[in-house]
Image 1 (cartoon, helix red, strand yellow):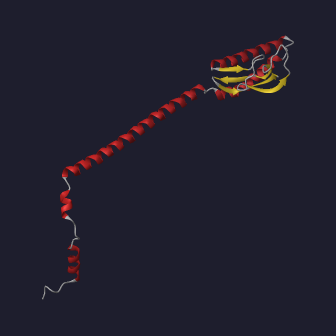
Image 2 (cartoon, helix red, strand yellow):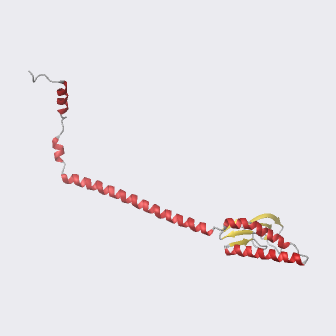
Image 3 (tube, one colour):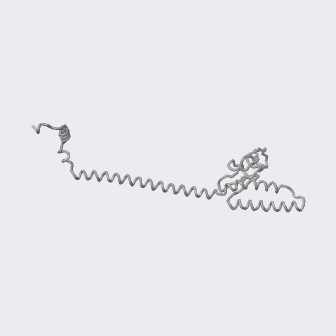
Length: 186
């Protein structure tokens, strides 16, 4: 009778010990070779995925290096643009000063000094690949010139040519720093 009395703990143990009906023959039917081939296929898939990620990361690094090199080249090419923008008003003022007539010897010496400074600045701009654009008689190009006035064309001056340059324009390499302000024959 002692065996008939069970504590609640023993009853729980007995219930958990019971296993559901599992087909033990199904696990026995799995061939170890097939299981290994499945693992190999999974491993090969993971390797292919990792290789793809590596190749994409490598390509992205190359693209970044190329982009950086282009940005560096552009920065070097246009490095003097801000300086030129700052210097151009001074050159304009020197050009206006040179247009004034010098009557006496002192004024002529001052004008000679201004001319020397002007030539030095223009030379410095040219040395840095900054060139003036817009000259009378040139064809009008809206990429480099800004039309401020229109002048009637005649036989000697064809239409769409520059009649007068009101302010010189400047380009750095292939970039317009300041368009030339011009009067155009129409």
